[in-house]
Image (cartoon, rainbow over all chains, first blue to last red; front, top):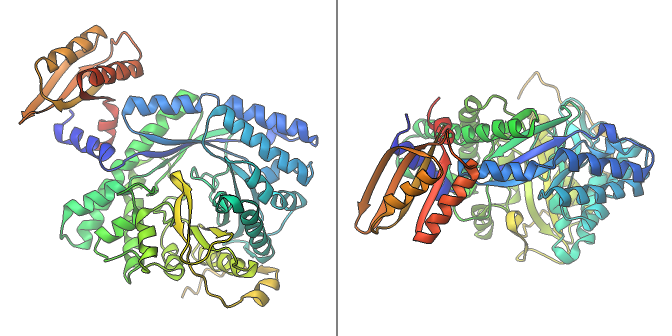
Length: 452
Length: 89
């Protein structure tokens, strides 16, 4: 039996606390599109995506209406393009990026992910081709997202790939210099990348995935933040309980939407990604949750502890609410997409070092961080290597989405608008890691006994 | 299957009648109503059986929302499953 208080709670979460489903992402395998004729490859990719995802957006809108809960994004992820474009040249890869853009335009999704390569142990010729055209692909398309996995806990860290990505990021920034280097906002460098992540820019359809799949990403920092605020002065055990219960409710909505979308589209359900994904909207902020927990500002000493507790409680609550959990599952801390994070940077409370520490206990990594445009390539590589090491050593996913905004320096900010938001430029350390980075090779996989 | 219809806005004569007529027009059978008026503010939660609805549920949602706009009210219609999922294990 429905109770009035439950109905009112749900309605309040949706209307006042920004509860939404962040994304329904359809994963589509492109293995059957393989061809050594680049035009035929592009045509097959376009045809497959537009056929499989034909009803995705409409179905998302219908579900949104049925349950009265906003579904913010409808997206598509595809097999990493380097795996299907082995028979074509670098130019062919670029054509594929345009085919992905056309397919995304046709089906009406707002991002398509999978212009990707998995190079944690080494690079194939196809991987090199793809990576060489990432800057151009991201400059010439608006909806295509790219990601490169450069390390895993089992394989170690491919420093040659990191060096290549440092160069690629700088070039992407230069090619989109007229738009605050927005290309870099669509490019993620990963360690231990999940194969079923529904969130952009890092989504792709992994090699172990079925033909098509529906993955759903939930959100709701505003709901957690309001619950904490209402709880007042309780102790941390009670607070953890409260966060768990709230995460449970949020995730149940995600599971409901995922089941419905999978059923309507006739596509298997994959996973629900239990993430607290912030938006630039007021109140929809992970930083605000940390501050509601009792920190004067996000970035204060104690932030890592608060975030670790939050992240763990979200997972514990969410796991019971969903049949299959996957993706990134945890609290996101993208600087530009979170009003509280932006404020913390602007008041000088949050530095790149603190962000790095935070990424050791929560999902993803250094996300949507704008740095001075004149940052040298090897410093970018150093930032990537540090962050990737945290993931590899801790057997978790970490990632770097860093924007060396051309022409901007500390004190300036970049503004992408919409979900990507606005980021103040963060200062980096000026000392050079050049000799270390230029050694190349691989950092061996870490040992997992003798833990210290 | 049931739908939860919430109606909020400035109180006036005949709000319940208008929403109820719309439900009747689309063959939604009203099962329960809980309503209150605080000062001039009207709030109602209505539970309706939608098994025999003569239009698609999404169209029903749109029609009631349109009625709301006409009358200066906020009318939201949601499938009961979202409440069941959230509040019942």
